[in-house]
Length: 234
Image (cartoon, rainbow, N blue to C red; front, side, top):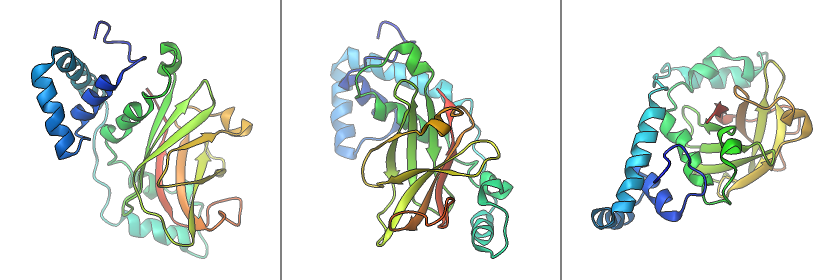
């Protein structure tokens, strides 16, 4: 790649190299990619680019194991009759400190097949890795400043009978604001409402709760929080 600072306009081979570097390929796909890497210098160049880029980004994140009782404590606070709002819980945020940079970086790979954005606009985008201790729901969220949309792609998670997943935005000390229902088995492009968009930026928290069919009957989550993460600039 002639310019290692520009990741716009990427082709399928560059995406393949990124997925290879992140270990996202199946055994068969990995074997086919390895054979191509042995034969194709251009693909090897793409792989070196992504290995260098991912290694440098990961340096800024330190993995911290959550307290063993974090999820139990969270459930108790969520469903106690008299409790503080879940989004004010220090234990909640500590329980997600173990999310590594690699999960969030997948969002870059997922989004590159869309039409190439302007490099300056891409640099202003935000990424969030949403997960929770004790939950198998893992979602990456990529914010596009040009469209005002958040693209959600689930890495794992299951449909739950008679339940819906609902997305929330939390900004500062304000209560969560619903961004609508999402599907756990499909890509979701969520248009941010004007009141959320006005203050959306690094530090904004995105959360997913499991609600009754049709969504929460209240203006705030009523079901368990299955994934949460804060937006970070990329």
